[in-house]
Image (tube, rainbow, N blue to C red; front, top):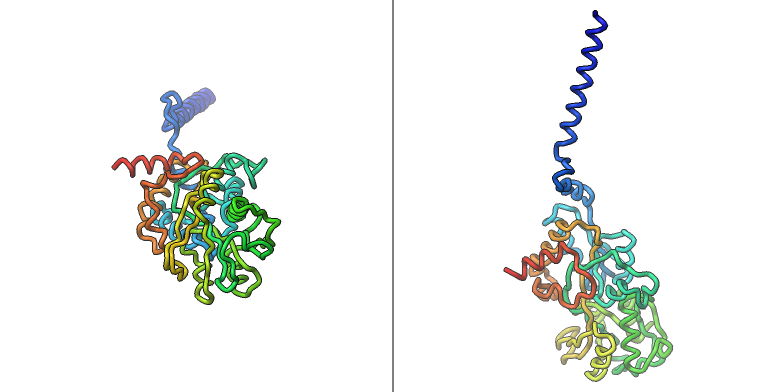
Length: 334
């Protein structure tokens, strides 16, 4: 009799455990309702840190990136830092490889990456989307007044910094030389970053440098502090020919007073934008975009006044992240 009681007790215990287990599995996990489990908490845990790739310390990306990182940290609660990098092309590759979450990039380079062209031939980047457009990046051909270089044709046989092979600056230099009937073989190309270009111009080791960055650019301002800077202008007919062949360019003017220039200087520009990994959750991408564009007017850099939500989709040649699109839809429909 005693054994029967124990068997009955054990049986009832098993039944109770099965009922309890069934109840627990149904709490918040009802697959019959068609509602996916809430992944918000998981997403926040996955992104307790974000990195923004910028460029060299003497360019425009780096100081803006530091400010953006602070805004994102404050807005999202996710610790965000700005990191020095080799800029546009390297940044797209780093995003593709999962080595960063957000990056500054030229609009033309983002286009090449998505379509597998030029430096991305055979290496398509299709897991990256846009946060938004920022400001024009002027392609500046910088020299010193004492060097006597006044036109692109004067570059023949000269030592010219053209940026790292595969960089956005290198592509810009190559295309501008092409429009002026020149190639890299007509000059003595030097693969230098902005800071080294500044030092090399100052010491006479090079004769000129291509620098693609928002104006005023720190490296050029630093150079002008110790020597008289001259910016070689792009004539209207050459700018028209460039834009006809490469439509992501636009005409630009470097205003008088910049780098001590006494008159406006005609130039061309591409766009600066921010790119982001597709896998960043929509809500987080929305908060990142909001943090940047809602706070851009606080930036101390001159380019801050150009970063506006109403221009955030201008010139974007790659898909926009759904979270960023959500922000722009809200901001531009107020």
